[in-house]
Length: 236
Picture 1 (cartoon, rainbow, N blue to C red):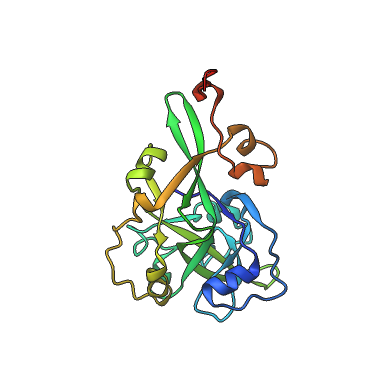
Picture 2: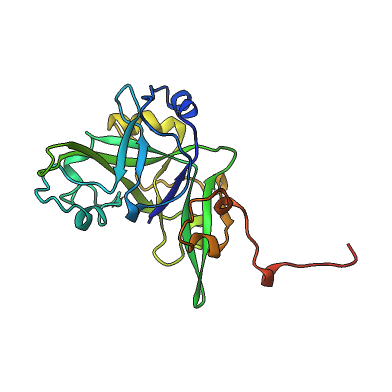
């Protein structure tokens, strides 16, 4: 699954990368760590000319209540295997696809009775795309239009099977060649095909930071090696 993500690119870099306009009102404060359960606003790429700010946690257009947390907590991810079956997502298939720009996402590895956190990135790039779906919902109280998104997940590849070694899932990462097909809805490749492990890296990070009250700090992306695993050779 993918319940924590990062997006540290400035707006001008997003505009160049995706060949989109970025409205001046869209903040570009770097997100080093964001939990989906806090429903952060993300800069999302669609077929529109401009990048659109959307909240993470999809609210279907047919949702009639004003308290959205109950549904949006359950729609942070959409399993690619069941997208066309679930009522929250099936009306979006081949219609409202989006790209979720990412600098890296976070997962936990079970190690015996403990869990250790990792930052997972695509090698040799500071920005890659995760497949997503989006919807538009009118708040019944404020009558305001809100746009929200979900991250599409798939079975883990070899690397992610080692990191996310309980549920063995991962975000559906897209190559640059797949991005336009995904946006158009003309998905003409095998959806069970996973992003190759050799193009990814998993960096161990400090548990103390990710479990702190404010993990959204640059230090969360630094590699951390526990003291028990450090080796010191006085004769080197």
